[in-house]
Image (cartoon, rainbow, N blue to C red; front, side):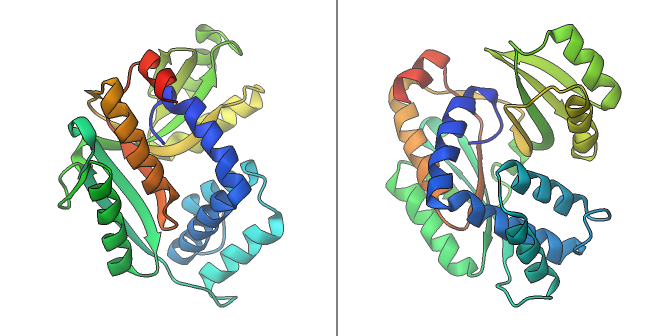
Length: 248
C-alpha cells in the first residue's frame, strides 16, 4: 500500500512477508530493467534508475543482482522486455484504485487484474477514470519520536520540500519528484532515518471507509499487490486508525 502514513505498519509487515517469498526482489528487478531500458544504464544521467538502485539497496538486494538487472535493460544480457501499464478502478465504498504494472503480456495482465477486481467487490474502469485523483510526489515518512517538527522543517524546507504534516505518530514530508533525492539526502546528512521514502501517487481527496468495507478493500489491495506484474497500488481510502487496527 502506498501513499499515506496510516499504512506504514501494514506496509512494513507485508514487505517482510514479501521479502521471504522473493516478491520484493522480483518487482525491484523489473523496475531496474525497465528504468535502464528507458533511460540508459548510467545512474548519473538516469534519475529513475538512480532511485531504483537506491530502493534496491535499501531492500538489501545483492549488488550482483542489481548489475544483472541493469544489464538486461541495456541489452548487455538477454532478458524479458516489460511494458508499463496502468489500471484504474473502484473498490468497496467507491474508493479509487490506481494500479501500476510492468508486464510482458498486456492482454493476460489486464484479464487477471480485472478478475481480481471482480472477485473482491471492485470493478475496473476506463483510462482516466481515477488517474486525475492522484498526484505524483516524493514522500518521506519519519517517526515523530526521532525528531521535533521544528528541527525537521529546518532540514527539509531548504532542500525543496513542499509540505510537512503530522499524521498520527509519523511526519509526512512531501515534495515534487525532481526534489526527492535532494530532500532524502538532506535527511541522511543529518542522520534522520525514514520509515519509508518513495516516489508515490498521493490522492487529492479521500473517501472514508467503514470497518466492513475496509476488510473487503484490504483483501482487494493485497490480491492486487500479490500479482507478479503489479508494482504499486494506490488508493484514496481514508480508514480511521481504530478501524485499521481492528482489521489488520
